[in-house]
Length: 233
Image 1 (cartoon, rainbow, N blue to C red):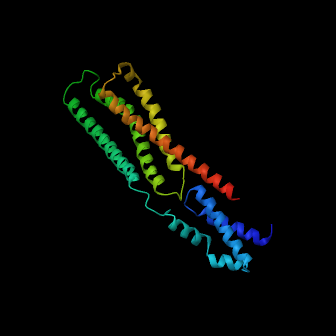
Image 2: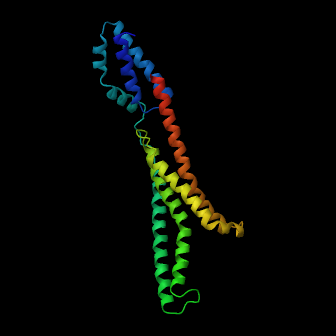
Image 3: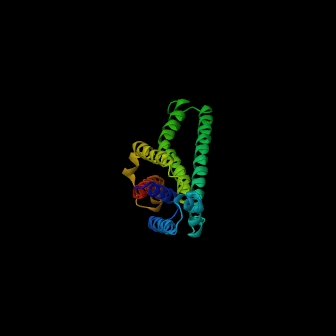
């Protein structure tokens, strides 16, 4: 491969890496750009002059992105996840505040009367037991909030594909699920196939599933990016 061919290959690959269009479109642009460069060379242009005239790889990619609509607004669908995440965060804070309020109320009432289940320590132990049982729910809610935020970012930009937030949210969902099953497993003995049981279960299922779905999408995007990079070498 000559020096001129190396320059052309490096330039075209740099342009392709900055394109924000589907893979098939990238391949087509790559071929068209190479054809244009070789046509100018046959007309007597030097490679350096051609590349200077075309502009930097970023400038060329930006023109293609603008022409093909790659810079368009990703749409309002992603804002649904932002709203869901905010609602879940507010609800989790509300539940925590209610738990703390219930603890203070119970302790005050038992301080004013004689407890039959262990005096002042009775209500405290009951509350601690209840709180431990709720840890799994809070972890799942936290994972869901992070997943909603990450999904908002995922649907809005292809420039970054960090797995950190997805891994954290999936980890919280997994740990929360294990904790919930361990502390609330007895509930399944009394499970009733009614709407009162199904509706909370569906919400909990969404909190568990979303982080893992997003993590899978992140891995899929990263895999495609690596394939595209290998195809440009």
